[in-house]
Length: 167
Image: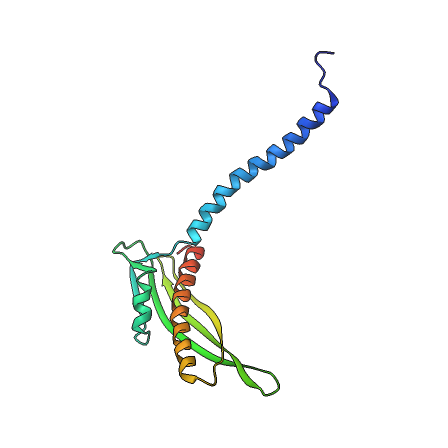
């Protein structure tokens, strides 16, 4: 009788084993996913050469210095920003068909060259703001501020995309 385990204790230990198995897996995968999150959320990316199309605004070029770092190491890829374009759309609604929202879409065309080859991509970001027909000057000012924010968003998404594709 001394070598036997009580059935209730045996059931408890089997349940505890299942819980500990899931807890162990959970404790292993959390640090791994945290490392990947840090990699994707890294705010900078290093390049050997960074080139901009002459049509790219100087404000975008200056903002890019916060995200895109140029280093002299030849092992890093080359980045070319081909195009940066903003498109404005008026969104209409209501019976009078007046514009109620303005949507601004920002597109960034880029190319990354590594030792393995070239890769082209397009990053798109959009945002909306309410239309302000009575005060067009305020609306233009708000659009300029949104374009300023879109430039930061495009750069953040570019860095995230480049980390994901592994360049």
